[in-house]
Length: 344
Image (cartoon, helix red, strand yellow):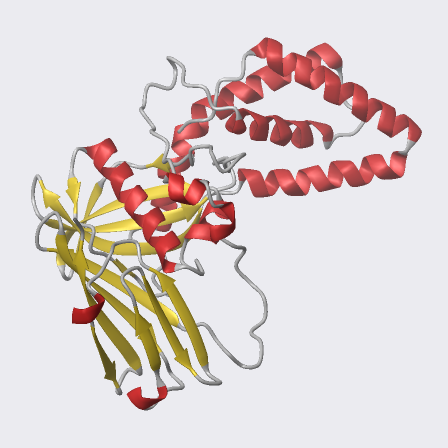
């Protein structure tokens, strides 16, 4: 997704409104005017900052040829957040690049979302099903852009491996897509400065308004001939859109010492309807499986370790709870739950 080409007439109308408002504020309330300018400069710097690494997953490209794929998830304020639960989720993707290390050649793809989307669906998602939805939608996105087939079995890398590749190069792959529209925005803004004059005599006005207009330009994305690259939008499933309460704000203090443990999920498929889901739950305070109270049904998993941990997981795919197995690995304090997937 590239920033929209805001037509000059619309920008001039917007600028006229802002100029008038700020001129009145500068004349009637200089203190508020100064605070307004300072706040918008600060917010503008955040909006114009480069994409920030959020997490990285490792999976496999199955076709046209098999190879390891790393997917970098970035948070970027220039990617708009959906305005309503029914809106599609905008994303910006890079091209697949090849890199070689001690383990051989692998592929790298980077995708950027608004930080709020990653906050709810990303690494720290409270419900693993929400996280799994975002990862699988990102893999769909990669397949659409690059004509490849990706495995849906993946591993989220540890927090000390938030991205794969050169960070400056990865960030540049995104900012390069908006450079033409940013240059045009600067040119149009300089023209408006000549038309309307400075704002309230402040030398900071140009930066503040430019950043504000840049934000507007990104939010109102409109494909044009000058933006030939196809950047599809990711659409959340109806099950999520119709239940906005399903995904909650991450945060809050643990009560009574009860913690939500960290976990990972891996999936593998034998065919279209049969596969295996493996959930690894890390329990550093547990020394024996006898401490764990595990309950598995067709569509959810819950674990309780009295006075230590509480964990509930809504499963994306239906599983065979009667054939599910759990094993506690003492060395790593990890409870491994293996569940056959029984799609019909």
